[in-house]
Every structure is written in structure tokens, then in C-alpha cells.
Length: 242
View (spheres, rainbow, N blue to C red):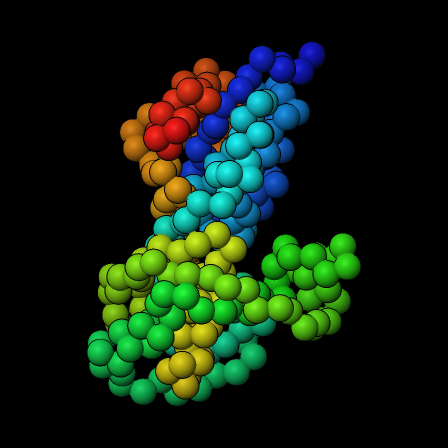
């Protein structure tokens, strides 16, 4: 079947866990029968939520949409650090968790508010000499990473039930929430790792009825349903106030 090159726009997908962002793009290409699709910001396989797909001439907006701030809902568990800084890695160290007060937890989160430098994890897509860090990590290698300047605009503690803490964080692009969880654990002295993550907003995009699709709809080829959720480039520029 000939590729459909007439499709141009932006599609919000609510990503399921246990798949890569590339998996979602590959399935969208088949569903929409078009090759020109990219995504705006990788989500780890463990993570769910907003993955923005740019289609056709919408790919020209990729860098612009990727550069906008993000909002995540996450959970961390105190008492253990892991090789990936999340629940999918091997436990490297376990420590007893003191009976922290809510105020002590809040103080640790406050230490990572505003502008600061964050060292990207080894399990990331950043390239060193053309090789993604995660490929080096799979070989058991660890290389020096340059700290990155990031910003946390806002955070909220949704539930504290030590050793588990549920939170919301609004941050700049290039921010690693699992490193955030790891660093907060280091600040508290007992270690921590990320146990759940959902991207709830990216820039001006947030999930509303009818404005997004699911991986199931893409995989099952429900093209009309998917197309009805797609935003035109005009809609996108209006949403962004351009």
C-alpha cells in the first residue's frame, strides 16, 4: 500500500508501560500508513502517559515541542538504590529507612527545587562518541557524564507513606525523574529509586476527552478513531498562542 503523505499534524498518545517510545512510533506508522512520524521526548519503557507524535510537516515542530516544560506524576521508594535508579534495575544497596516526618521529606524535595545541575543516569539515550549511554551500561561500563543544568518549577507531595512517596513535579526538558528520586534518597541518607512514572503534561498539551489516542487503538488499526484525535497544525499553533 502506498504511503499516505497527506497527513500533517500532532497526535497525543497515552503510552502504556513495557514498551519503548520507538515501539509506539512504529505502530503509529503502520496504523496511519505514513513513514514521516517522530516523537517529542522519550518515555522509558516503565513510564506511561503523554507521548507527542509529530506527523508529516508536523515534524518541523519537533524541536520546538520537545523544548517545552513537562509535568510528571511519580512514586519513589526509600531504602534501596538500583542500577537504573528505578524499579527495573538491580538493587545495589539497601539501608534501613528512619521514621521520617513529612517535614523531613519536604526538606529533601525542597533541596531540588529551582535551578541546579543534574548528572544524567547511565541508562539514558544521551550519546557519548555516538554511542547511547544505555548501550554502554548494558556492557557493564560506566563513563563520566557532564552534569546538566535543569530546573524544577514546582513540586507537590501527593502522599507520604514511608517508605513510599507519591509526588508531582514540573520541570524543564532533559530532566530525569529517576535521577531526581535517586538524589532525594541520597539527601535523606537511605537511598531511593523510582517505582512509577506518568507524564501528565508537556508544554501546552494535556489530556482531555477526545484529544488523544491509545496504543491499543494504534495497534488494532482503528485509523478513523486515531485520526479524529489528531490535531491540525493550525490547532497546535492556536493552542500554543502562536
